[in-house]
Length: 392
Image (cartoon, rainbow, N blue to C red; front, side):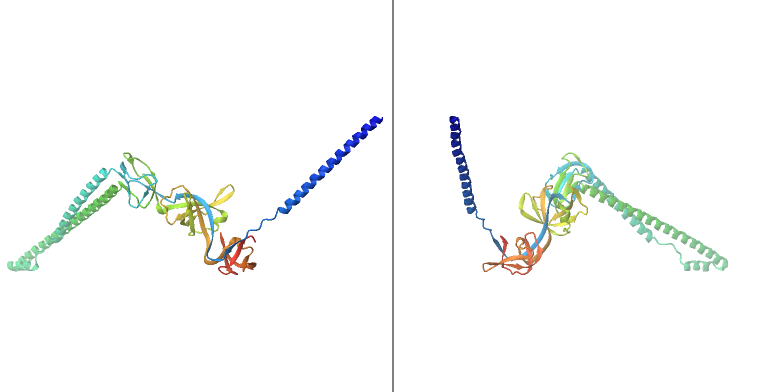
């Protein structure tokens, strides 16, 4: 029994120091953690707020809406020959830029030239016939009418003497009147006939000249020239093949536009004629001037979002422009010039913070147009005032 008791006592004595040690160790850990927390908390100071300032300046303020789109031809021209023929010359390819009047292609002109030569001969022949008809008509008009004078008849009657002779003389005079009437009628008929011939000859000449004009047009149509300066979009045909009315597709330089898509909220601010800046992906630093030239009245729905297309024209089309390439447009929807302005980040509910002699004070201002970058200040500030833009 004693030995058993001794065992339990010994076990209790051994257990107590272990428990005390565990408690002591745990307390030490907590104490260390507490010390660490205190140390870390003491060193974690808040970072100072960075303050930036700007000057009140005078200049323009504007708002814009931006959208992306693609370069395309607003209208293209299909060019061809006025008659079919064998293509003997092709001077351009797709992508070429051409000047007005530049020769683009030709077909064999031999047949058209033969038509011109024949039509020219017909004009000469008709002109000769008209000249002959005019001469004949003039001659008919100049032919005198036979008309014996009354004195001759009276003299003849007086010589024969007597009423019967006089009567005979009178009968003779009557026959002369009939002859004169017939001669006048014949002359009138001749004048009418030559007049009809003259009209026919003139009509023949007119028709011959019209045929010559048409033949010359067909001959000119064996050559395609550029009606306006622009870029070749497509070429159909090769030298040696048959060509007709659709050989070359040309887009005029002035017909190049960017078709951009604007949201319903953005298009509400768009108007035809508004100035724009166009950016192309091959040179993002260059800004090309343009204008809004058309706004679609109906929108299209994509992913439950309504968008409206607008056409933006170039004031001057760059030579390196590629049809179909992407573009970004920024349309100026409102602007004012020569006004005081501050960065928009400096204005909070009509109040700005002004730094005067190293001290900051809040000041109420009257704002005007709130632009994309700056806000117009109508009153409350002077040019050159220093205002806080951040860190307030």
